Length: 94
Image 1 (tube, rainbow, N blue to C red):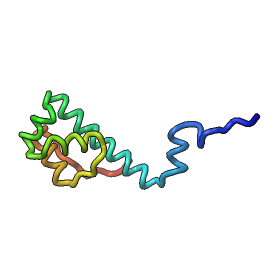
Image 2: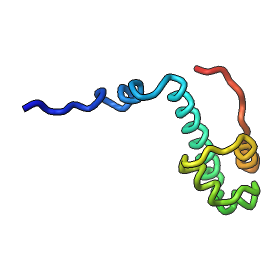
Image 3: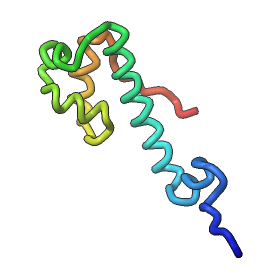
Image 4: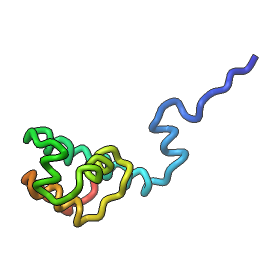
């Protein structure tokens, strides 16, 4: 009996078959940005509710951004990062 083999042997192989290089790069950038936001908030001991008070961005919006279920505007990200002592920089791609 033949067994069904998955596409690729791991996530990276599967990802390369399904998504374009640009889509992978964009996804990686979103994950890195969201991770930095979460890490900065947690390192300072700031809850999502406290970040709402500091930034003016509603807590449910912050939660959706951190879960990766929304695509925030640049202005929203800047509002969230400023009270955490962070900003966004343009750097060369690796």
